[in-house]
Length: 304
Image (cartoon, rainbow, N blue to C red; front, side, top):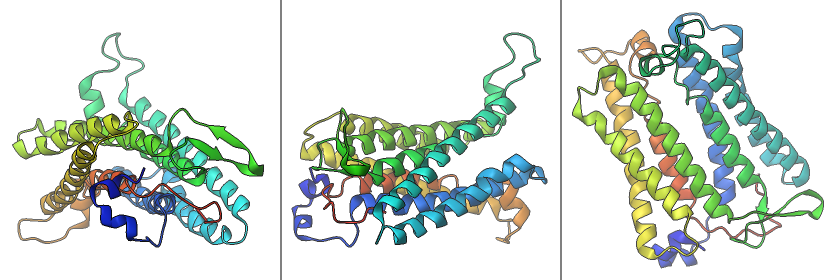
């Protein structure tokens, strides 16, 4: 079902230059690049980046560039490009899980007294435990986008050597569940980050409200087999709210990092409010809107 055309029927007559899955793969490549940049800034806070902290910094841009190369390869050898992309996305999942493990280890006191080894204060002030899982989320999105669903909305994926696998739900529903999970992770990270200020600024509750709304609506729409036009409109409103929240939040973080005279100081941007972090809300909103595009794709078209 072409969800966005249910709300705007004129889109049925519009041919987009890229398919939904191709846009998802492009977003995955862009996300990997900016994840590397964001983690570089985050790891620079300590003043010294140790060896294993370079893994996501190097992997992000490298994987993003390799995905673009795979897209060119797919023009002639789609099967090879599919294998390359899957290796990248599986590695991305592994990098995310490994990073989350390292962050969790930093957030606990293994030698502390029982009952004090893990607490809210440690989770608030430790490295963001869910931050690295963004790599895993990108991996899940990419793996979902690489395999062709034929026919559309059937949940039947075409694998290599003409093999097929039947999923319990359609690819659109899978995307919606992933958007819900990604929004939830972004919400939790935002809460833990803003908890350092004890929420003195009432505007800090805006991303929490938007995050809860976006998570619930995405999960609800994903659970529906035949959503109504009204359901889709509510979902679109939630994704637009996430977009606005992310952009406004980034602008506010930048203003916070500037000096009173509006001067740019690199040290303040490294150690101050993370200006890229709010854009995760905008990122999830963008991905959420892409999900609504036409799921149909010809088997002869190149996904990568």
